[in-house]
Length: 231
Image (tube, rainbow, N blue to C red; front, top):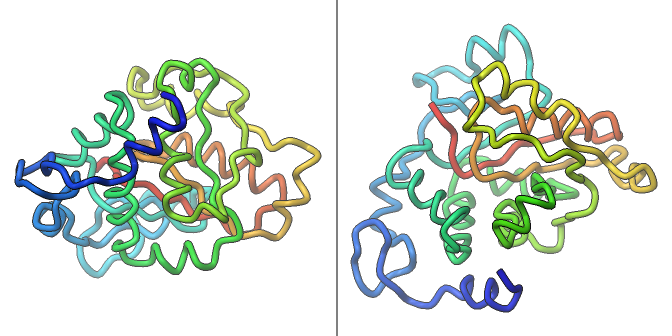
């Protein structure tokens, strides 16, 4: 999609709510956000939903993931799963404003953004970028903080299979060598606090693979930030 068309779509003109179909409203109205985005306890390390009173899941206690923190706004369920599919695959970049607002209202997200030196979107392969016309993670990062967003510090080096087409074990290793930091730019990550931005976290393979590369390049603290987390 051309850049000027993306900008126009993100402009956020009043429209019909995509969930309740109320009019006029933003793409997702305040009533639907209040109804479908109630905060809930999540694992500090992987953002999976937890019973009240717990801060980490058993899997993360057993083996710490490469992220220092992981934050998610909602579960990957109705209506968010449909809205994210629209955002990614059905030319609806204008939804990014609603997603950014949703994330900023999520506990601990604002402090993570304020403390971050860089916001790094999970990059797409060149082939997928041509097919889609835009990187949904890059649009989201820019909406959250354009001044801190960098699209050149983390690159995609391999065109891997679509994650949802793989079994869990295959997902965990399909991205092992999919990302890289350009050697001349490694110094920009040394001792820095980084927020990795993506739309959905399932097994965590993308975020974890990217985090390991960033850690090797010298990043001091890495937070994963996604709109939705699968249960």
